[in-house]
Length: 154
Image (cartoon, rainbow, N blue to C red; front, side):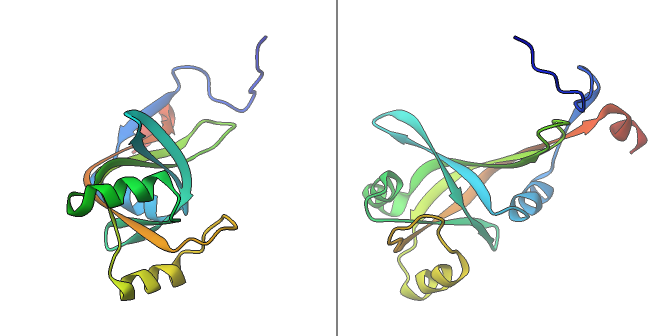
């Protein structure tokens, strides 16, 4: 079976351009949806979440029974290593960008900060979502996928 994608550039007519950290964070902050990756039972686990970018940190909301909430609580002050990915890639042309942030996730424990995040970040699920997790980026990588002639013009 073959899939026809008449709008996609031909193979080899795209370029992958590395993004610097500032540009990658700017792009990540331009969208509200991403995927958080953490370990659960020693295996990678991925969850789709909405987020905000706050002073260079990624903030998501979570609930008491969530695996990430439990992992972050168990880690205490050390935090738990996570990766966070967000992107905007056109499904027809396969052009756009992808950003991956790796860092430590910590539960937000300050009541004023937590109240602020509750006001700024509306959960997508119909649950009581009383926790917030802040991810401090240690490693920021990103790529922009462009048409080859776009990359040549710049």
